[in-house]
Image 1 (cartoon, rainbow, N blue to C red):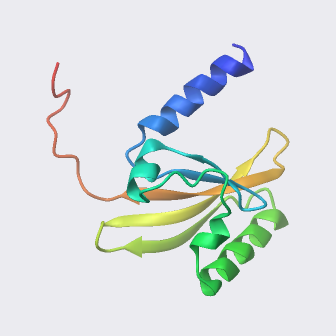
Image 2 (spheres, rainbow, N blue to C red; image 1 turned 90 degrees about the vertical axis):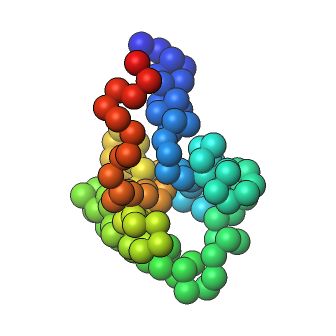
Length: 123
């Protein structure tokens, strides 16, 4: 499979996710937001600097996590918080290339609510 075709598949996975996905490079530039993230944050912030969206304490934590990611290619995910209102865990996840070099990061949301739809609903 060609890289372009593979890209289409990976982008489709992210576009279909029901959690916000915001990918950043190591300069904190937002390089991708899935449709759910654009809707959640009421704006497409692609090309903007993520740090502009955070207070000084959060910026410091983000930088600290990036440094931890850089220390070892085994440092790939850190538990960030639990959101009681939305019943979800939030993680910061390293993005690495095929040589395990750190190239960016994203925030991962894992919801704890059980799905209410019936199995194979609609078919």
